[in-house]
Image (cartoon, rainbow, N blue to C red; front, top):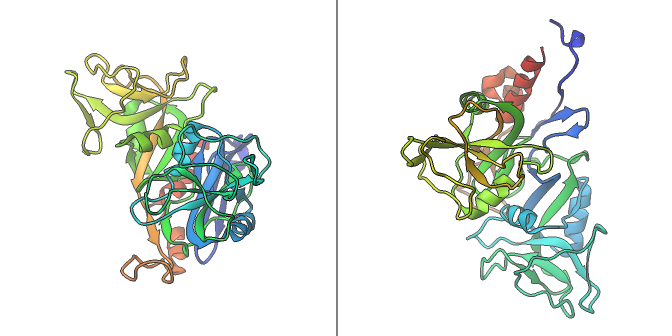
Length: 350
């Protein structure tokens, strides 16, 4: 059957340059993934750049990518976005918070002001800009920080309906393939197509990944935020019970579970789904034995770690040369997970 003879379930946009393969899966109502180097959190794409700039240059940098310096609007979004900033190596980030010098804060992008309940100080008089993660404390909190002259990293944000620039392999940060979100040390993908548990495991494996395990409250908040709320979506994760209340991860990593969940008895119900569709609570639920149909969260190690020699240690993995783009044309086995996902989507459309 020809592609032209079939109503399109997905459109696939591929752009190949000498440095990076950009791929987005698109539906009629808009993109469902972000460009390479961007993380889908809620309904926006976020990018963290570790290269240090002053505030004005950070604003200009985000503009150059087709985005704006980030605003943040909820505790869940804040925890997920903050999770993009590495800890333990002196990283920080400007966000688009600006004070008028009289303790009145606003967002650069003009959206309604919000701030977290717990922060590192937002006096807003002599210090009129905000940085996330005090390098000395490594606390991942917001801090008012002078007037924007001191260099820091930056968080950029864009609507996932926007055309943003994929981040080429010249930044001092790990890199996930297009459509995957960098969270902590791994790349995550949420698929809302509903499958059984076993089919979900197979789907993730076809992408060169594994059905996701989760290992901390921070990671859980960020990963859970990838599942849309209010539209009846849910996701299998790789949690499996032996039927006697003992849980393990499909990928063999050490078991972890969040402090707050909706029940993990693990006797008759031996699989876990995030977000009960009826309650829309974004909690973990033990859920029958895997026959029910849900979306899935997949996880993969970083496909490529790329570094700028001027910013990062010499022993870091070098960026791939232009042959990587050529190799990508050889077939699904040579491509990243997002490309394989596109091929799989085309196959499903036929």
